[in-house]
Structures are given as C-alpha cells and as structure tokens.
Length: 139
Image 1: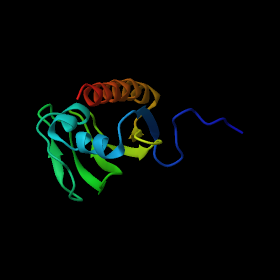
Image 2: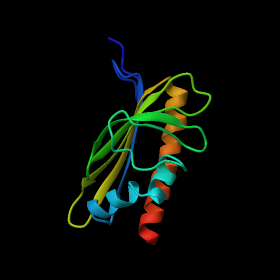
Image 3: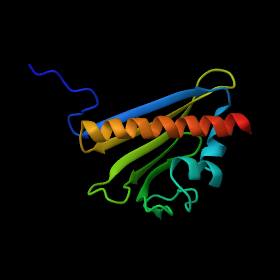
C-alpha cells in the first residue's frame, strides 16, 4: 500500500491550509477581510466584496476568478488564478470563533498543480495571514 503524499487529495489535487488564531472577535475579523483594505491584502487591489455567486473579479495585478459562495460571518469561496498559470484553483477564506473575543482565520486552497506549487502557496498564504493579523491588531 502506497503512503499518501502530504497535501495531495484523491479528487482535488494538491491543497494547502494555513490558519491563525487572533485576539479579535469574529465580527471584527469578518468586517476587515471583506473591507477594501482587507481584500487588498488577501486578494489584491481593485476588487470589492464578492458576495454574489458567479460574480467575476480581476485584481490590478491580473489575478482573476469568480465567487463560488459567500456566507456572511463565515467564509468566502472563489476560484483564483494568477497571470501565467494555466489552471485555476479554489480558494477559501474562513473565520471561526475560537473562544471569547477570539477568532481563527483560515485560508484553504485546493486544485494546486503539484508539490512545488503547494509549497509556494503555503509560503504565500502564511505571509498573507501575517499581514492580515498585523493590520487587524494595529487598528
């Protein structure tokens, strides 16, 4: 029996998940990540809240995709494809309660091409989460 490779799924290709618990309530984290300043950090400049299913978007740097789902105070799920990639991926940004006045912010990306792309995206999303936490705690 072959051992599964870390990050590889049976039907969604390669995936990555990055999360961080923050000393802010869910509502505050949600309000920030759906604000123009928050979206600029995690998705890119030039995009507004993506609440309508099927709504397309493109950032000023050329990342593009469309909204798959938007659940208030819970998660945003969308397709995500930067310039130069031959495929899109599925990206989810979620917020969960993590105790009194605390929230867990989580990024999950699937349908990545291979282990190398998974590792690049892991580093990317770790930086994005750090930037979001820094912006939230400075406010």
